[in-house]
Structure formats: C-alpha cells, structure tokens
Picture 1: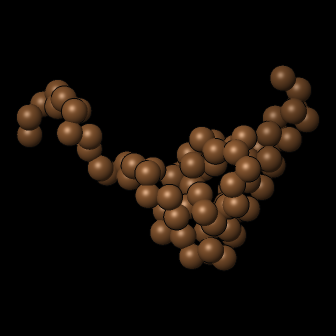
Picture 2 (picture 1 turned 30 degrees about the vertical axis):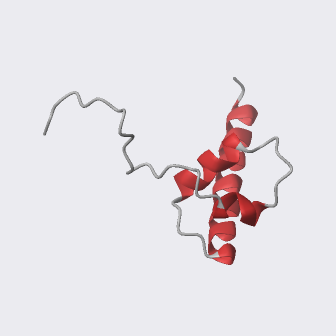
Length: 75
C-alpha cells in the first residue's frame, strides 16, 4: 500500500467516528459508538430514516445473553 492510501484510510476512519459522535449527540442516543456503527453496518442498504433505526428494539444489546447460548464455564 502506498503512503497516500494509508493516510486516506486513517482520515476516513477519523471522519466516520466524528460523524457518528455528532449523530449520537444530536439525536441523544444511548448506544455506544460501536453499537451505532454495528447498526449502520446491518442497515446500510435499507431506506430507513436514521432516527427510526435506533428506535427499533429488535437489536440485541451486547450485554443481553440469548437463552440458547451455552456457557463454556458456568461461573
């Protein structure tokens, strides 16, 4: 990879993080930046308004465990 390609990727990453942080603040979202980016990756081809994506309660919280999930260590 060229130096210019690496710099471009870094600036794109910084820009996306900044835009998501601004969106989180403007909409008053409670999800983490990581969760917001995951929702965007799942819904990138849907024609859904941004605010309604985050009102959908079907997205599982990362702390919520599925009742069918087996535990490796029963702690």
